[in-house]
Length: 254
Image (cartoon, rainbow, N blue to C red; front, side):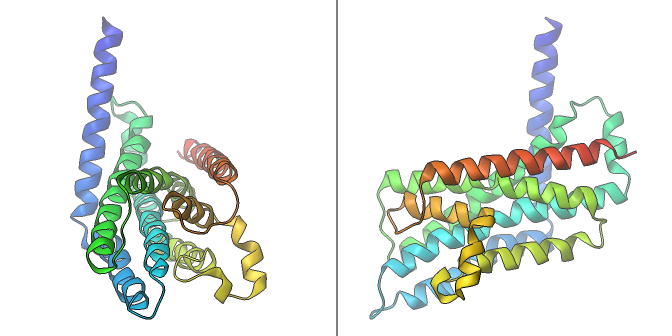
């Protein structure tokens, strides 16, 4: 009986943690405005513009998938990287350890927050692509792309957690931006990799954003590289390895 009560309290604590974390970041303009507005704005500027008459309609499809990746990267990198670093500086992690709450609920709440933001970003981009970009997909394709993007936020949560476990609150935003923007460029999220020098194209397989972009393109029937299994395996290994590294680092915090 006591185990059931503890499980119920744990689940309620996790839901409450996720809700409060989402509301906290939603009410933080420096996070919410760029995270929600920039992917849609850039897609409308570049994806829709390039898809005007005379250009291939596949441009709008390609950039919708890749800008979805660009969008879902932000909640994980910034939501974990900056907030964890700030909470470490303020001693809030030590305070949380003293609370009667399962330790994993702290990370679980932030994971749920990142996935909710990823879902919102995907819905905003899908709406913009349908109305302004002329993107037409079947229900199954929309659902697969959405699920891919929501779950695909997890590797960037692990990477953000790693940054937050090492950096302080002042350095974390700069470090996250140094990861976020170059990775987006080198993964072909803003334009096809064929427009970059051949050397950069060879190293694209190192970035989790590139693997997620390939999965996104596959889900909507656009040309892609590699197999779904290889991309999924790479992202899974990346998430586990980086997440464990970050977890061990945080466990050593006083």
